[in-house]
Image (spheres, rainbow, N blue to C red):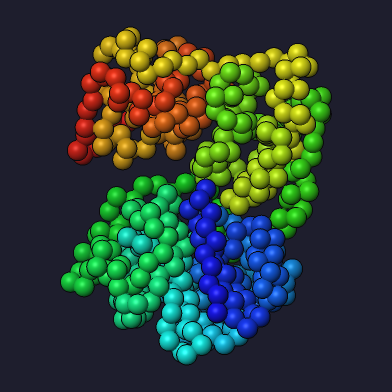
Amino acid sequence: MKVEQIYTGCLAEAAYYIESEGEAAIIDPLRETQPYIERAEADGATIKYVLETHFHADFVSGHLDLAKKTNASIVFGPTAQPNFEAHVAKDGEVLKLGKVSIIVLHTPGHTMESSTFLLRDENGVDYALFTGDTLFLGDVGRPDLAVKTDLSREDLAGHLFDSLRNKIMPLADEVIVYPGHGAGSACGKKMSKETWGTLGAQKQVNYALRADMSRAEFVKEVTTGLVDPPQYFPKNAVMNKMGYESFDEVRDRALQALSVRAFKAAWAEEDALVIDTRPQDEFAKGFIPGSIFIGIDDTFAPWVGALVPDLKQPILFIAEAGREDEIVTRLARVGYDNAIGYLEGGFKVWQEAGEELDQINEITAEDFAKIYNSGINLLDARRVSEYETQHIEGAFNFPLDFINRNMSNIDREKLYYVHCAGGYRSMIAVSILKSRGFTNIINIQGGFKALQTTNLPLSELVEQATEL
């Protein structure tokens, strides 16, 4: 028996590969199928099952393409109603895989179809539990992401309480917990950095598994402090439930190398969004006017998902040579299937063609500290929780997550300085503001980390952030 976690840091997502006697199962695969197919081929194994713990909201799963290419069966837990051929298993149903068994445990709460998969080894001993978004290390799945349900988040939290107490906590402490996500995912509030652990350890440290916890206490703790999920979450969940276009077709359409002339024509004709994925330092020195920065070297896909409202938005992109396929893949992972090409030769050919250029105005943290005063307009692009912990006195919280909603609250005539934690998010924010006609915007290099090294006054908020 082999068990491997295939972890993708950009999405803080874990897929799993299980193999026994030449038969394999893949749990919660990402959109691209080739890594899973190649992994099975390396073992001389046939993929028998594609197991889905639930209809995911934070990424588009690869279950349809993977099943089509391998003739594997797609398996969901009880109550799932997918709009495609799949096996909807019964609670407690046993799936045979070589010499091992996988037991389907219906664990509603995160969503109503949510299920966990219990792996029993060749001797019939419970070995590992693949919990999806039901149980994380240090946390549990948030109960407000279900697709089209009449149940309140409090109702779902109650179901989750029962699932944990009746299906998961009675299992042996030695059982390994393999969750669907780690720290950084928006599917929970306070996940641990570790990506696997034992159930016994979780009973000791996970607030949601306290033995003396009442249902009312659980519901209150699980539902308190939830922030709005990224806007793409419900749209991805619908794609996972209803089906989607083959990734191969998406990829072929997106990997169109366009000349400067063709790029400009596509931009105008398709009313496309141009995303510049280069390193932020390069973007700041020069970029195509009207394009926005979302760098590929950070959490690219989740920020596209948070900031681009329409999954069908035509997208053109600027990339470093050789990274075009990576960009298309990461866009498709969160449902952005309408990339229509990239600038062949990158930003350099745009410059060489004598086309119009723009730059980002920047200032170092040290120089900002020299001009800082109580009347300066300072926008803090970090999340509310970060701002509440500590911020520069006089700064307004302007979270990048909600920039489209909050943009109307700032004055085009005023000069604004913008920072985040380290510079990535503020560069995105400044680029978006410039694309919308805000010209008096200056980015603070190094973000809050750099500002903390100066003599600027700091404030802490205990209760609520000051938002624009």
